[in-house]
Image (tube, rainbow over the protein chains, first blue to last red):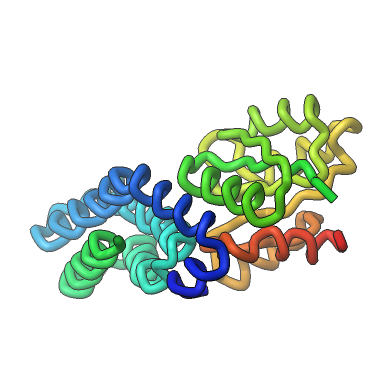
Length: 111
Length: 124
């Protein structure tokens, strides 16, 4: 259901969801920052296995929650990052960087 | 009919959105637990009508929590629905094979989560 439809169907739910989003925004940003830090390390060739695992976990959590706040595209992008950082092979730095930037902009754009 | 649902999830945001959804849309009573161990205790003490159980949790994960629930005669009969962000078919089959009533996926739609649960459990 789109945000507009949700607003019309259950304004009380939409308002409460917006309030929860505001409250959990710092956690969303923290998870995005973990992914970005790993992406930077990847570009520098210094990504540790622990960082890679942490980034996959943060992306997994974002994939699970963003769609719940009407950010379905955020879920798709986070899922692609989760796959990148879960892969046994070294992730492609350019793809990771683009996806991480995109993810951040999706999170910051939600009103 | 008012139902009592136990949500077991280590992530505060998911737990709170799910609780908000079930309380606001369906009018159900919601109790929560932030870990598998806490969930076992709450299930035994509160006897909910169903349990929404996260798969990936630190410590006792969802499948282990489910098996512990089934071992206890006081909680063995409570329907359990797994909640997961894993979308690969191999994971889905593995979870379904555990014997849970249903597997639901994150992200869920807060508007329809209660309907998904009710349909999975045959609640009218």
